[in-house]
Structures are given as structure tokens and as C-alpha cells.
Image (cartoon, rainbow, N blue to C red):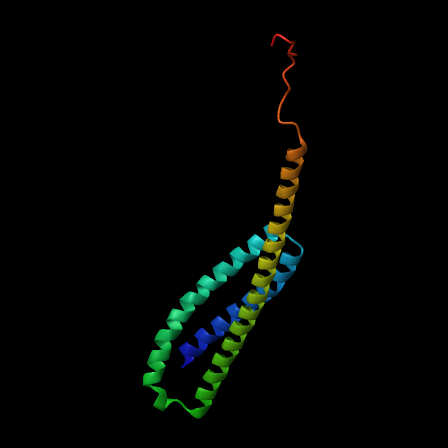
Length: 144
């Protein structure tokens, strides 16, 4: 029970950090601070990797705990359930923020694509009005 609780507490702590980073990620996207955004994404990736490791440990501990579920008091079960619920809520919050940010990035990408297409169209139109090359400086007379 204590090992499961410790794992859930570590997971919750990492998710809280991930949530704070996710919240600041949106501001960096809006302000187009690409270098800072890349650093933040790198930091988030390190946290996610830690969470993956904790998750595999928690799965093993949960299996052990299920086999001994009859020996847990109601208070212990409620405590574990509360920790699991808090962890689930934090995960959902991070996911919602990330989904919103992905939508912003997709919208920004579409806007950039439209602007690039407009620039390409304008450049092609200008080329159409430019001369195709130098006219031969030789003048043709009646003999050719």
C-alpha cells in the first residue's frame, strides 16, 4: 500500500510540473518564441519519460495490491482511490491544454501556408511581366 501511494505521489508531482509547463507552452506559442518553446518541449519530454517509468512500476504494484485487496481497510482504499482520481484529473487537464495548443499550431501552420502560397503566386505573376531574355542586338535588313 505504501509503495503504491508513494508511486502515485511521485506521479502526481510530475503531472503538476507537466501541467505548469503546459500552461506556459501556450504563451510561448502565441508569442512565437520558438527557441523557448523547444526548450520547454524538451523539458516536458524528460518528464513524460519519467512518468512512463513510474507507470510501469505502478502497474506491477497495482497487480500485487489487487491480490491483497481483501486485506485493505476502507480508509486505505479511499485514500488510494482519491490519489488515483487526482492523478487522472491532472492527466486530463494536461491533455486538454495540449489539445488546445495543437489546434493553435495547426491554425498557425495553415496561416503560414496561405501566406507562402500568396507570396509564390505574386512572384509568379511578376515573372510573367518580366522580359524573357535579351533581345538580339543585331538588326535584320532586307537581305537577312
